[in-house]
Length: 297
Figure 1 (cartoon, one colour):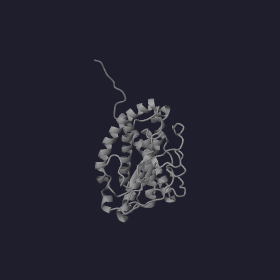
Figure 2 (tube, helix red, strand yellow):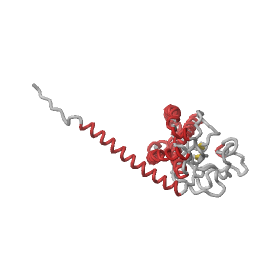
Figure 3 (spheres, helix red, strand yellow):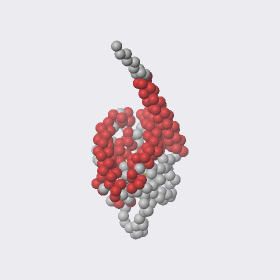
Figure 4 (cartoon, one colour):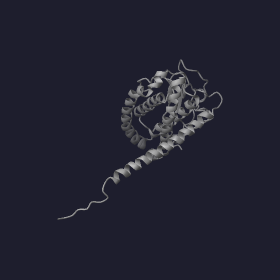
């Protein structure tokens, strides 16, 4: 599903404009990380602009940072709370602007993109995808092994903007389910990494897929892209389009199986959470008298 209006004509073949207008080399090609052959921006298969995720992981991690990872991420979580709070008010302004003009003001859009990028780095670190501590850098952190690339601004359909909070509900549910499942699986991955110092490949692939889908959902709700979140299980790569281990997202059979397990665990967690809330509400109601009898004397 997409609310994008008819695209503009493609640039001339001899254009030197880098992908998404980013200055310098293509995304994920920073010194110190594996260099992959280029390809077209969306891997030759995706016809709509999508949020892309590059994770340079599957490397040894320090066991002591794995052991206290949840403690180390606390300062980042505090910052994320205030960023999301500020982003909420910025999104309200962006919604009204996009509703009447079909676009989000550049300053607000850059602010919201900064939140998505910061969030991706923190979530990836918390889920043990990489060992490097996320920098306290709001916008770009080009040397960090987790990168998010957001497509350039495009005109938005006012009708889709108006109903965005309704349209995003299915994607929200999917993202919530897989994130809950990934959190459960992360405990077992954490135990494994305490002994091995490496994240198993299936866990790396499945977790990266979950993070990418979550970021795509956030970007869609934040009016950063007209493209509805999709491709949770990745896409089939074409030749010469490899940019990182997660771009394109080509999951192994083990990663696909683990991703299904995450979905099942997430659904179970949601069911038990709903049942617990229902029981709590029932107990609260049952503790009160069904009716009050008053006698006048």
